[in-house]
Image (cartoon, rainbow, N blue to C red; front, side, top):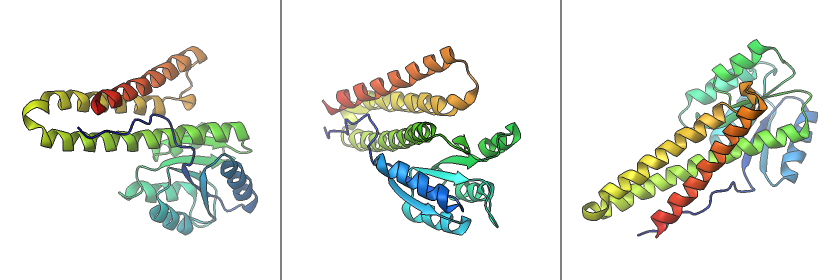
Length: 216
């Protein structure tokens, strides 16, 4: 049976696109993330951002809201309407801190929201979280593709087992997506966030177990 990828941790080198019309912000964020091992690209306008996103397909986009001609909300709408870019995690950056601004960002498909002036620890934590989510999703998609290939070549003796593994992977994807949606921005108290983090970590452990069992 073909061996599947056993990796269950994020690669150090995630792909990040930073979109901001302020050169100082671009420079600070670019230096910060590059120093942490991320592959970073920048864009100073909406059209440049759309071209960059479709060309390089980053894991995460740090997207400023207030920009001339095409603001961050409009850029997000374009990205979410395109099948090539709709699954990229978007973290909004803004000096706007009103609940309505955040609500609009999430309604348009944003994955997270950072208020300016940003704190470096917060930026790194939120980017790391979204890169991890993206790479886990890619890993599970690869696993499901491999499971499909294995099932097609072992129809007589492997259908039931492969169906079980496929169902478990689907459930893990649902759990991870829930943890992603109801993280720090949920307003949950520290105890509930701690429990949510434990569920998230157990899901990763289960993903590794499935990897090991399938690879036997």
